[in-house]
Length: 95
Image 1 (cartoon, rainbow, N blue to C red):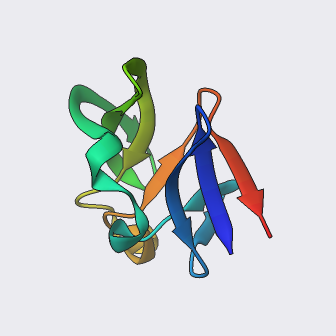
Image 2 (cartoon, rainbow, N blue to C red; image 1 turned 45 degrees about the vertical axis):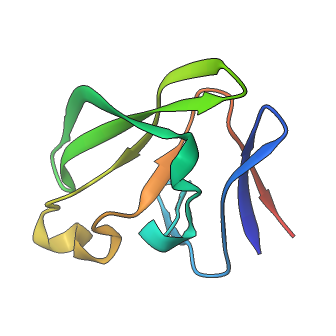
């Protein structure tokens, strides 16, 4: 089981994450949607495509653009379509 934790709250947990470039990508149904707020931020990866971001809102604290996903990935990254990865202090724990 792999978990994403921030501010002592489990944001996501799954036995089926995809490990890409050292990041665990969680399936869309593994995230606790209540903590995720859509962001207008986008970045680009030459082989994965255009990333979209989420702000995290936990107990009144906001972690801006701390999660990202690829809604329309390029062919080589199709296996992580809509999967969510984390950074900016989010702890990834594998049990």
